[in-house]
Amino acid sequence: MLYSAYELAYSAFTPARIAAGVGAKFWRSPLNPAADSWFGRSAAAALDVFENATRRYPKPEWGLDSTFVNDVEIPVMIEPAIKKDFCTLLHFERDADALKKAKKSNDPDPTVLIVAPLSGHYATLLRGTVEAMLPDHDVYVTDWTDARHVPLTAGRFDLNDYIDYLIEFIQTIGPSTHTMAVCQPGPALLSAAAIMAEDGDVCRPASMTIMGSPIDTRRSPTVPNKLSEERPYEWFEQNMIYTVPAPYAGVMRRVYPGFVQLASFMSMNSDRHMTAQYDYFQHLVEGDGDSAEKHRKFYDEYLSVLDMTEEFYLQTIHEVFQEHALAKGTAVHRGRLINPQAITDIPLMTVEGEKDDISGIGQTQAAHDLCTNLPDAMKTDYIQPSVGHYGVFNGSRWRNEIQPRVAKFISDASVAFAKRPKSKAAAE
Image (cartoon, rainbow, N blue to C red):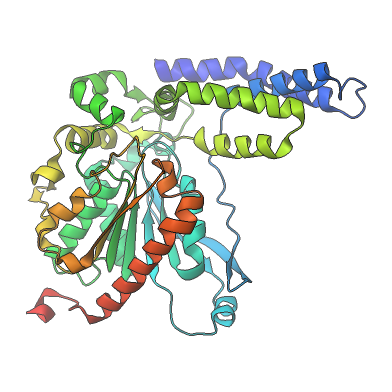
């Protein structure tokens, strides 16, 4: 009922939202003699804030049509490498001829699969992550699908399916694929790598970089971690799961809706968001277009959310945040115990933010403790001072301090990959 009520409320606000948009244009019109007055600017700003607060934010565009290599602009085409019901594997394909001329070398760049989180926001939240990796890497990204657009005939999608997707994607991209899990997918990537390592899969990752991820949320638990443990599983099942209404393709699918997730996101830092909206209003009144545009770009991304399937969300809550199954060594994938100890030749880098209030210090580092048979020389850990969760993979600290370290780690891992046995048989 809540999902239907939300849709009804959105429809009910549509006339007011349209009127607010028209009103804002009226007060800003150069033909309006009051446009430059304090009242005119305030009226336009207030209507603009209302229109933005009540509209629905669509899936953002990547906006990465090119990258720069040695100061040469290289065209980029974003092509689907694999299309599945719940995810599309995107390839950010750089123009080969332009790239060859810019680099003046035939040596291929490392291939990197960036695993985007399926935790509410679209993969475009990693735009800054991808942008920084593009000049020197062949980049693939998991682009997760909004569950409300997936018909029931496509079946269910849970954490086991997520792991299967990652294994298939890595195998499809091929040997020498470096992997990077940003936030939530850390446990899934570690599980996929462990399964592939135990099987002696020649396509097992050339390296793993895990950033701001809940490998073991018992360490430095944050507010979200504590809430997940304090409330019983049944509470999440009864209060967070709703049925997709018509006319969406996923009608009758049970989901954790994006608008419920967004309400949780906003409530965590409600004062900050209220202040941001007031500052936005002030910037509009003062004519500070740059600051207003920066606000719009951030919230166009932040307020754009997708639905997750019931089974994926609840299984993640239960196994990752309540039972800590992977950290305790009890995680099972389709009846098979996940064994991180099988990882012996996949270099591992963990990255954490000093002020991360989503994944506390030590939660990502726990991956090193699970990979007990991985030599210390293949383990790298980095804590970035003065950044929170978002700053681990976006912003100036990511571009200037974290990404160069990740790039060096991948480069070193590429050298190690060239020397490692490609299968169990070869190793023996």
